Amino acid sequence: MKIPAEPRLESGIALVMVMAVIFVLAALAGGMAYSMKIEIRLAQNHQSEAELEWLGRSGIELARYILAQEMMTPAQPYDALNQKWAGGSACTNENLMDISLEDNRLGRGTFSIKIVDQERKFNINTSDQILLQQALNQMGVDAAESSAIVDCLMDWRDGDDHPLLSGAESEYYLSLEPPYYAKNGPIDDIHELLLVRGISREIFFGPGRADRSILASDAPSTYIDETGQVRIQAGLIDLFTPISGRLVNINTASAAVLQFIPGIDPVIAQGIIRLRAGPDGVEGNEDDTPFRNPGELINVPGMGPQMVAQMARYFTVRSGTFEVQVEARIGSYRRLYTGLLRRNNPRDIQLLYFTWD
Image 1 (cartoon, helix red, strand yellow):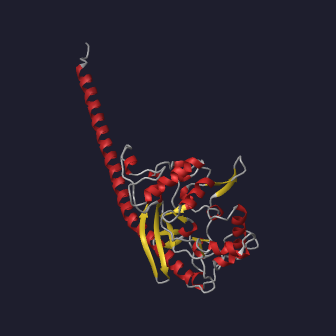
Image 2 (image 1 turned 90 degrees about the vertical axis):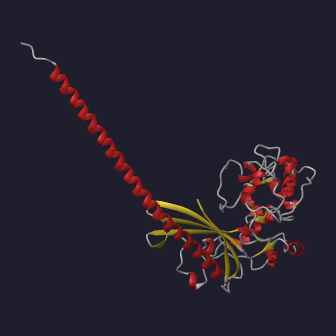
Image 3 (image 1 turned 180 degrees about the vertical axis):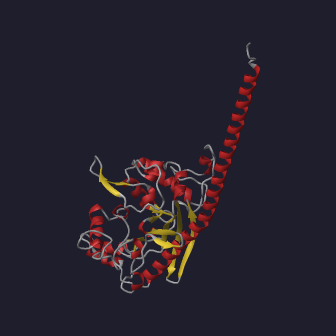
């Protein structure tokens, strides 16, 4: 006698349904476990964010202390690349002897700081047409194109809507997509230059460098082009800043920046670098011989008294504005903070802004 198949079929269906329910429950349990893991991670991140910010602010306070102490060091009436703030190895202030710029432990985390003075560059808001033209020419920008860029930049800074011969004012910028007005005022952020007619990303950042940090402190390099002219391997961001004083610190400026000044050619610029670097020719160590005042330029080969007198309106040996980069870490969490300090005197060092990436 044959056994009916229906009970076996019903048993199979029931088994499938049970397995499906188990699968769904397992998926829900897995999803809940994953969600709980994410929630725990977010809670940890939130807690770490607050601690990271305090690490960042602690780095800024350390930078303020270092800059104050450097200014109170009687033996160093100048700011130079061999000092503690710049990562140099020459330190005559006993209060700074045991201080490190890197891997400072605080609570659960650590922080490292990097300080870059802004007086190593020219102020874009006070640079005249001659300096701007000289910079673009040394960068290898075509003479006709650089002349138009200078006019557009002057129009961007001035307070009117009357364009120079090759310049541009709001009438031009409002025709773009998206439209915007000319600044007609001082530049607040160096990245504003990307809004100025004629300034491409290559001119701003430099050849082959589409994205650069504003804090980049590598000295611009130079090269000889096919015509035998000395050119700068750099962008405007390497050479100008909107947040420095009117004068350039002769102890921290690169050879490329020094060459903007009328009368200083590549030979004299390198002579300035060699003299301040000391006997070993390497900057940042104990044998450096920084300039104590601009008058000491007379010791540079090729510099006469009349030329040195003219240089006084361009140079200083002190820096007053410093950008501080703080890298804070807690375990695998990392945050980069940036602060801008203005040093008026050892007891008055202002924090102008504090941001993070």
